[in-house]
Amino acid sequence: MSKPVIVSGIQPTGLLHIGNYLGALKNWVDLQNSGKYDCFFFLADYHSITENYSPAEKKEQIFNLVCDYLASGLDPKKSTIFVQSQIPECTELAWIFNTLTPIGELERMTQFKDKSNKQVKNINAGLLTYPILQAADILIYHGEFVPVGQDQVQHLELAHDTVKWFNNKYATEYFKDVKPLLTETPKIMSLIESTAKMSKSAGAKHYIGIDESPEIIAQKISKAVTTPEGIKNLETIYNVFNSSMQGKFDANKMAETKKIIATGIADYFDDFRKKKMELMKDKKRVMKILEEGKAKAQPIAQKTLKEVKEIIGLI
Ligand code: ADP
Ligand code: TRP
Image (cartoon, rainbow, N blue to C red):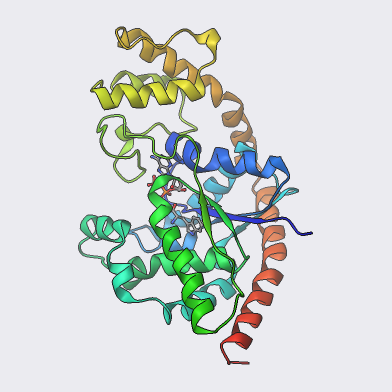
């Protein structure tokens, strides 16, 4: 019996923060190591070009993100790790899904509305059809479970609907349902705006990057707001990263508690920082992992696309 398939991706857009780690990446590593799933983890570069970006930086961002994946514990022997744009069959499947998706369903997506407000001069069609490509990312590998943070759940509902639309229109049961897998910490909040989620795009003061130095971590945590939501968020962070050896969380002594939290985070990622530095020096090895990932992913994508074309009457 084949194992259930897990698919997820992150956009190569900037440094990863502890929200990305606790909502997605840490879970990917745990799911991979459980041995219960066939795992596909990719870098969503096609999604990332829907935002304003500098072409000169994109390759570096891709390299940096794959080093994050590997240093966190994703293992090319256990998971298929690859770059989205290297599998063009996926974008072809997205075209087919375009013809099934009502525009209204895309226009009501929270992320589309947020990003349209953020980049008013660049409300491109890719920003609107973004969740269609996301559905194709998953379904081309017959993904059943998708480990992501809370903010992606609405997109996965659209992937779930895509399965329904496809299977109904073509009177088939070809695609299986898609379900999100959330962690216990699916929404880490910004350090200085405790009602907004921690996000790469809001600015460096809002987040803790997973490869930031202990000094920067201490500085950023010391400036974290201590509104009731802010304290709750810090306690969530403390509960994941601090061992009992590092002292107690005390909401009445936040200055002291913040130092404990900062040490906890810095210690937790100590090994990660070292591994990442090693990987960054070995570009050849890292690029080879991506080539091998492509070689594993592509035949599956080709098979799915061929079967879909048969079902929809093109071949
Ligand atoms: P960002 O909003 O920082 O640009 P991405 O959209 O690239 O992050 O998200 C990558 C992954 O991390 C997704 O699975 C997303 O749901 C998850 N994620 C992002 N921000 C958070 C957060 N603050 N808390 C938990 N998970 C998050
Ligand atoms: N939209 C996701 C994000 O911003 C990234 C992504 C693209 C993704 N395709 C996916 C996540 C497929 C899960 C499955 O984080």
